[in-house]
Length: 290
Length: 212
Image (cartoon, rainbow over all chains, first blue to last red; front, side, top):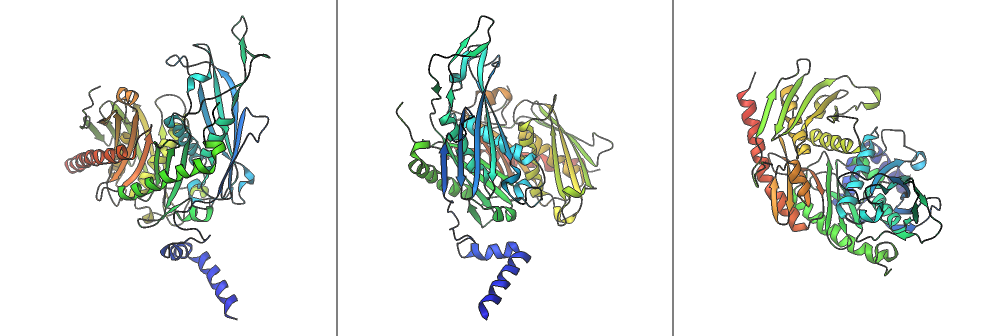
């Protein structure tokens, strides 16, 4: 019969010439999973899933799932900023996230080394800092002596491409759920958890919401690439807008160059996406009168 | 800080500073200075090898201490920029190693590193298909400073690093810090493109006058 032969030819073509196979879809304005070029997969965010953490969230973009856990520790503030707390971001790909975790083929972005994962953690940290989403002075316990240090740990538990967007959403959700415990300071200056007093939450002014684009070549840019697409991409552009409409990240990496006009088109798409996300996840990114 | 508003700081360059390297350059923009050492194409280990292309490896070494995640981010950004210019298809199953030693950090360090690495590649004779020029721009209120010093960067509300393909002004790297608007970003790109042309002019003039 004609149909089984065609299916076998198509699968063989995908194996032998993955780029050409993929381009055939893009030329018709569609991708192998049926999405349009600029469609993002379904997102989901749930808060407070990890009870042992001081704040947590789980975020999904399509199949990619990133869990974020926050741990608070008492630290000494920097001499230049005695009233401000700190935060550190770390990102890890759990071994169970993908069957290809140890192979070089785990997405072009992570070929072979942990350097790219650390670089992504640094980008997430910079995005949080740039967006000015939280007031670090709320992390102060005693000016000049003790501040809270928030360790933001991200773990990808399921990898289907595009960790960055899921990770940023997870951090936003986790910070929203963060409870700062009440403290008292002993005579020797040591900070202890006190039994009276209420836990407080951080005032979060805005959330950064990102959308990552994959750059195949000069003509083809797709939004929210899957793992199979990431293997073929030569560049990535991550754009983050805050929920109140400011641009806080335009991060382009990768080999392929892109014109400033294309970047502007992506900025427009990212702006509309951020507005949409506020409406879609009001419990996470919307504002609650407190 | 002597950074001009729209002007780059003075650029300094010395090539062939390291005897044992295939290519080396000491490059400075104002007081920011890097020492770049380029080796390659050379042997590559099994886990890094690529049957189609040369593997480009960039290491950024801080002045003191160990590399932290900021340096990892800087090295991946430089690696991406250089991978787009080096003709990697000409040397499969090899690697090209670029080590960038930061000597003095006084602002615009990422663009200093990228420009220095580009000049190191030319000194090493590694075939490239285009010249790339990187520029850092800061913005405070509506005032832009090109090639800022450390103090300028601290005072600014927005710091943007950009790298351009010198032929067609396309963007190879973009990295922003701070809150800005879409039109701010657009203006910063235009300003940076003009400055990048000057960096490219310096590179061409330097190598034409020091052919050895």
